[in-house]
Image: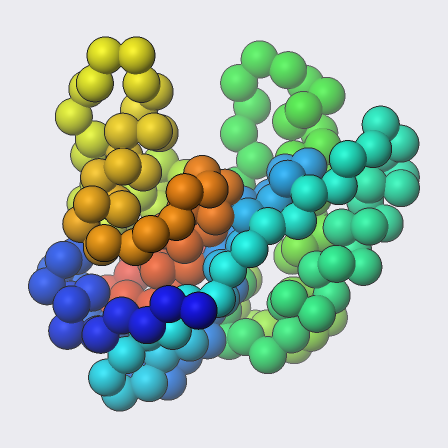
Length: 179
């Protein structure tokens, strides 16, 4: 678990932290990153990890994701789920969409009233992450590096970093993300 002061978050991102909120961020995929952020009046507490289901059997994979996420979604006020993005592969897009829908459904069944699908680019932009071009690196890698340098968070897993960015969006005031 990581503890970061609300003042530090506000200084880095220019937005105040909402006190006493519990937010879940999920980067849904076959290997899904997740982050739960709980705030109080002075600090943010981050708990995070990933779920990696290695199977070519889609139904088995979806069932495992359901089983594993059931406990993770419990006891949150907000769930921010990365919106599936269609790039080139329709089958991958279908899988990502289904996993996102599983997390949404479990969040709904757990009583989370505020559920949002957010594009990764939207979540990064809300935090003011721009990423300056670096040779041999994707925009995503550059932005994640920028985020980690700004926050001094020591996480090396890309899926978890995306989940932290998503969850952090839900803890900041003046968030204009749409459901």
